[in-house]
Length: 63
Image (cartoon, rainbow, N blue to C red; front, side, top):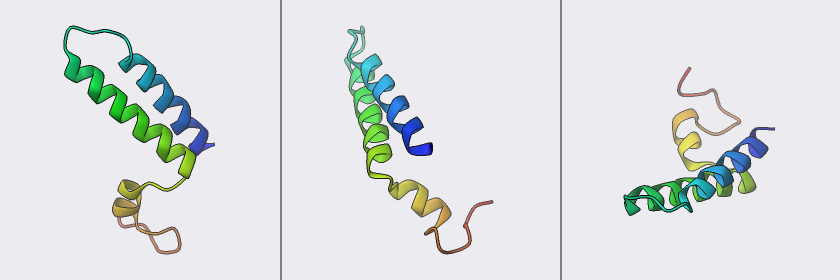
């Protein structure tokens, strides 16, 4: 369920980044962020989440 939510959110953010805007940096940021979220949902492995919470077989670092 979490992976599907990441894919949907990532694709939505990337689609929003494809619209023309006055500031092209916002488009690039939305495309990169959306692509990362969709990739993270597809792969099911997030290096940021692993760095914050640790591997799944150990107690979480953040609570």
